[in-house]
Image 1: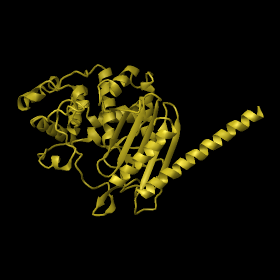
Image 2: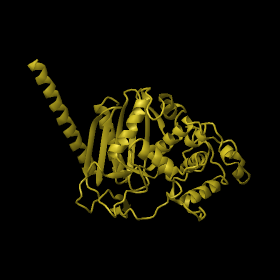
Image 3: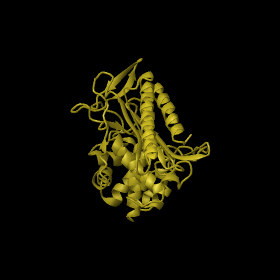
Image 4: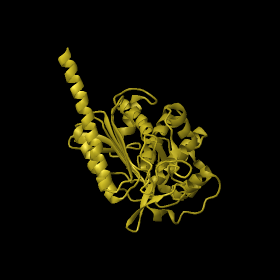
Length: 362
């Protein structure tokens, strides 16, 4: 018995030392690639195997990283919008095959006829051939829409449907589009009579205890992360008050969150992929992750080295977030940072590989 106890203690100490070595390794990547703050985690459906917070809120501040720091998710928001949509579908208020113009019939006369039959699932899986709105220059010709946020989002959506559709990318059979997620959110708003922001609040904040907020983390009235971008050859911190172009595209990429709260969301998804019912049915998780080839509902389907992953990355230029769920081992890898330079992104790709090697996903 004493020998077994000694072995258990030894293994625990070895795991702690290995975790510490991994944190040191991650911090060396952070420093080498000029990343002000980096947070990462490895989780299963019911446990956290690794979690570290490294660096500083800004290159110009001594504030050290903490577990309460918030990061902008960029396009990781899409999986959360898809999650909300799945709940509305389960409630019977809409169907994945509901057509956009079944919900907005009065808009059909002004739109391009190529969009007449687009559905909720096609919008969320990027099959509706909507223009991408992934580059800043695509936002320059947008008219100035008036009203509150919901009214401006409607104006943007109605205008997008007057534009010519993109040509289908036959290599993957989908065309990535932030605007498509805006249109999907508009469908959810009309059938629930609630704004996307309200649906987010009900789903995550009220029902699940996951604290989501919109836009960049507030670094002006409290100590929190600053996003960073390149100005010339220098990395510069960006105040959260700086205006940018995601006003219309919140449902596609504008949530901020802490790593511990994001872990709660990912653990729900892992449990669902294991066939367990929680906030959504297990069968619903199967559909939103892999029901549609290549890109399903907010999740890209990645097949690599005989393994399969649900994965996504996101950035609005000042933060970068990435998540990869090994669907065979039911384990997820999450990395957040507050810059999105090429060097920084290359650095965390190396870290992600190392995490996967340690836990058998590579």
